Length: 183
Image (tube, rainbow, N blue to C red; front, side, top):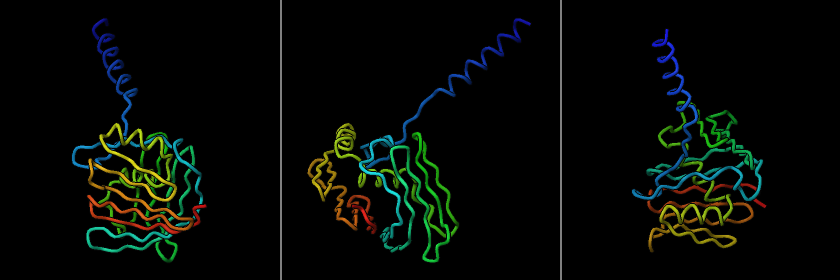
C-alpha cells in the first residue's frame, strides 16, 4: 500500500508542477532577437471595427477584410473574404494565441507573428520600447511613424494616419496596409 501511495504522490507531484509551468510566447524578429509578446493590457486604444487589409508576401498580393476587436482583455480577429465568408479566426487572450482558418486561406504564417505585428502598430510605445530593448533592438516612435532597428539596420517600419496603417518588414520581405477609422 505504501509503494502504491508513493507512486500516486509522485505522479500527482509531476503533473501538478507541469500544470503550473508558465510559458511566454515570443517571435524571432531577427535570427537572434526574440520579442516576447506583450500582455493585452498594453494596447493604446481599444478597437472594434472592420478593416480592409492589403498584404504582400512571398511575391503574392492578398486583399481581404477583417473584423478586429481588441482591448485590454485581448484581441479577436475574424478574417473575411470579399463576400463576407469567414476565412479564419485569431484570438490572443491570457497570453495564449489560437488560430483556425479555411483551407483556402494561407496557413503558413504563425499566428504569434500576426499578434506581434499588431502590437507593433497599436500597443503603447513605452511598453514596446522596453520589450524591444530587452530583445537587443532599438525602437523609435513619433505620433505617425514607428521604426524597429537592429543596430543601424531598419527591420520594421510603420506609418500611421487617421485611416491607414502601413507596416513594412524589410528583413522578412512582407508588407501590409490596414484601412479603417483609427481615430
